[in-house]
Length: 162
Image (tube, rainbow, N blue to C red; front, side):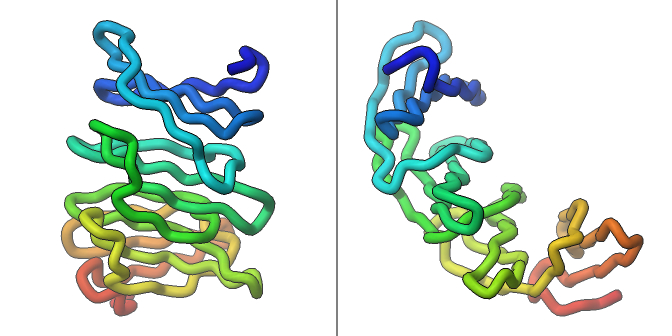
């Protein structure tokens, strides 16, 4: 690993080091610094965001402006639990779900709600590229845009309620 091409991510109990030149991800225990596993990221790219829960690591990876992959890795061995092809611009883990902002090949943006267990899609909702933030709670997902507009969705169904 070249020091110039490494990015480091500190999680709850792990440290990840990603080498952009070799597309290699190294996972270390945060307490003792011991290597737990190392793996190659298939399509490479740049890691945009990383998060974790008790058992998994969630990675949003960008290959170019519009493509990438969303990977969910097992913390113990680094194996892929599930993945979604495409670039996730933003993602948030809430309860047992992952909310992701994806773009398709026609530059259409979508908010997608998936199961954090297996990545199965629960619902999706189109959003425009002026999305500035989204707020998630047990009952609603509020989408706020730079132009001042707001959409409120039922978090269970994705149906617009306000």
